Length: 297
Image (cartoon, rainbow, N blue to C red):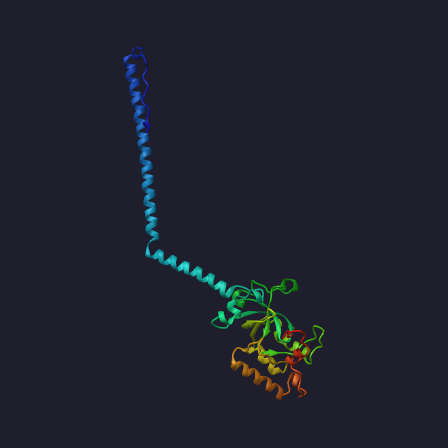
């Protein structure tokens, strides 16, 4: 270890200095050595003090972090952040298309209860299905306030969920070279006026083979919450779904309500039953024009 200060150098020829000069020179050298020693001691003391203070600071910080109040506050904050993240992932996340919905929505084997999606109806393509722009939490999610629903076709492309009304079948429009079924235009006009531009809640049952979400749909009309499929049956512009697969009813009780509504519309001659004649059902129509597989229902 090097010495913290240097020893003074003395002249080779001490006889060349007078006694007084030698004493003064020695005194100056001694003062220099003393000053260097004091400076070194002060530096060592300052460094030791800094180390002590740093250790003391770390000790105080560690002690403050391990206080029960700090630990409880940290746990609460962490839990809150994780809960908000889970809430956003499960309830506030917007799903652009039917294929983007998690399996917990569309597969009965993976969900404990019927999940629902809330959104804005952007278009009605047929008399028993429509397009929905998903707006989770509605106004509470700031939709219509800070967040806008697109209106132009380009912005809505690949940005809507295709919904198929569960439990009902409506008269088929002309497509795939097939003629339109009787009352298909009137049924489409009824559903369009009832839904387009409105906010609806869709209780998801499953996804069908056409990447549509089969759902029971509800809408608020005034102070009353209406089942859209049930209202369409009551208006006489749909029949109860007849196929053994491809649609759900949300339970036997609701299925029976649908059947009762159709029978009531027939008795009261509403909609397509107004002439009292037996009409070809949508299922019979699709079976008649089926080519190599079941028609799109």
